[in-house]
Image (tube, rainbow, N blue to C red; front, side, top):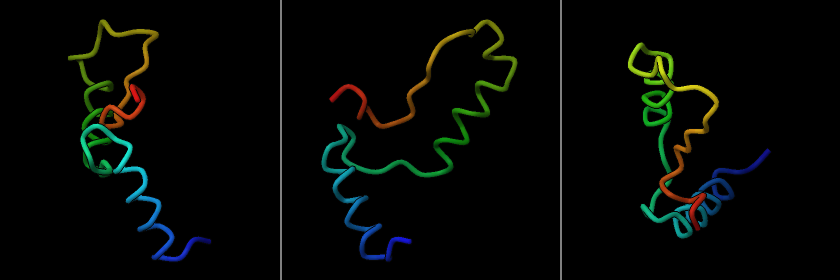
Length: 58
């Protein structure tokens, strides 16, 4: 198990390599999941939705 200090250090490293400069939170992930489960996403199939602050582009 990681200590609180190790978790904080990891989050800082991730934030430093993320274009938005921060780590996302659970609410941001939940909003994406809610959208994909809604009728607004009824025509979306077979795609990936990255909710990562642009990190995959780095």
